[in-house]
Image (cartoon, rainbow, N blue to C red; front, side, top):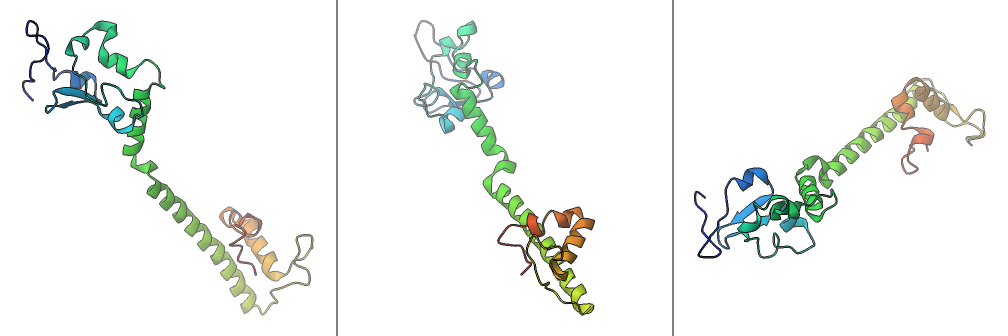
Length: 180
């Protein structure tokens, strides 16, 4: 707006000033109620204040030095209700932290790990099949010296490739070992 309405005493009326928007980026003005609001606090704060419930209209207290109502609202502490609300607002606007992005990243990483685990198992099966070798050994327990051709070949592949080592045998989730 170019001109804000006057309010207060008739002898000394005051009004909202547009240059306050530059100093206080969180500030919002409502022409319907001729009041200022704090957008982050309005959205996220649980505590009621003039900046969230009915709006702030006491323009005399804005340019009051260190007792400025806007500065008092912000507070000096990083844990003030206003600063917590501002952080919540920034977190909402940060799309990289949205749950759908985090889950998509985790699930795509899981898909890549599963594919690598399956590819190592398939390559081992192919090699053993082409060589006409037996898959199982007599004793496939962890204490055994020779756990069978299939498991020993997977261990060999894992010893040559760190990415494979990170996803097969003991490093695989219990529901996706792919060795039975």
